[in-house]
Amino acid sequence: MSSSEASTQRIPPFVSLGSARAFGVPAVAHNVPAKQTLAVADSPFASVSRETSAPSIGNVLDSIDDSSPIARELAHENKRRERLLGRELPKPEKTRIFTVSNQKGGVGKTTTTVNIAAALAAAGLNVLVIDIDPQGNASTALGIEHHADVDSIYDVLINDVPLQDVVAPCPDIAKLICAPATIHLAGAEIELVSLVAREQRLRRAIDVYAKERAKNGEERLDYIFIDCPPSLGLLTVNAFCAAGEVLIPIQCEYYALEGLSQLLKNIEMIQKHLNADLVVSTILLTMYDGRTNLAAQVAAEVREHFPEQVLGAVVPRSVRISEAPSYQQTVMTYDPSSSGALSYLEAAAEIAER
Image (tube, rainbow, N blue to C red; front, side, top):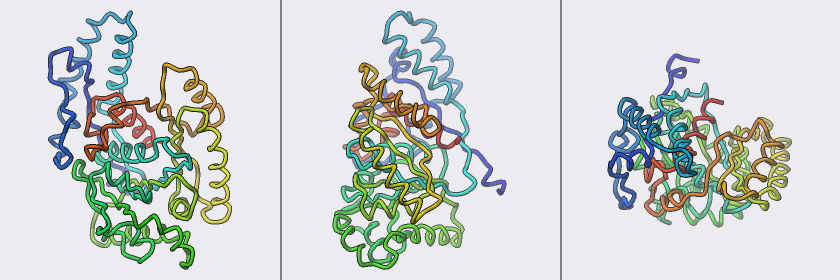
């Protein structure tokens, strides 16, 4: 591994919204117009230094009576933020390619994809998001145009257009790029059936793109995240064949457990016949509601069956996470002080350090 690959990147510091309000500091503005572009240097990621945030957090905690549930929660969040201050995220030895998949819809696949990608990119790592969901929600969240006239991942898979010709930079976060999806992908499942090596087309496109970047003197990609549709068709099979790791978001409800066994069977078939190197490396619990016993029971059961794969970070139900895509942003730029942004920062740090 070269010295440049061994270099580390520093995760940006954050201060809690609660701390800011306690001192009368205006909260981060959430209603940012969809078309507004935020430079990373001017974004909330870089706005608070270790020197200014640490004393504030300490003073707030010293003045809080932790006998109330809200105060205890605030104190707990501040401790979590303090653990992230100054943490360095290592560059992987080679590009790590994740397929984010779960055939059950509404479990947070796209939300997980874009927010973990944004967190890693904000820490200085080079990240590519490939959107192969015909709905194009990941493209929307990253502020990437994906109307019918735009060249997209459909053209890469069906028409052999080079991946470098369709990727576009995220306007809010440097080092984050995206290959968008368009409505044309809705028919790609049928069109792929008659093509040669139909399961390997995305993998070959990624390999060619990596070689082109090296040839042009561009930095190597550190992470690639492939956002899949909620199905197990040829688009998802292409994603499984292209990736080395699978990231499975699991909603903390009973139905999510039912679909997990079928997903694992399909992954096992991919491992046996198409991609022997594929592993289920990461499981993330999403939409966790700490007020219910069911969420705790589901989380405990998943951790019992997959102790090595489940991340310690848990993503709560969050209005801010749901609101962010309507402004064509991730929660990392829409409200970096929210509990949802904190949870995805923790998840990104865990993934990077594994």
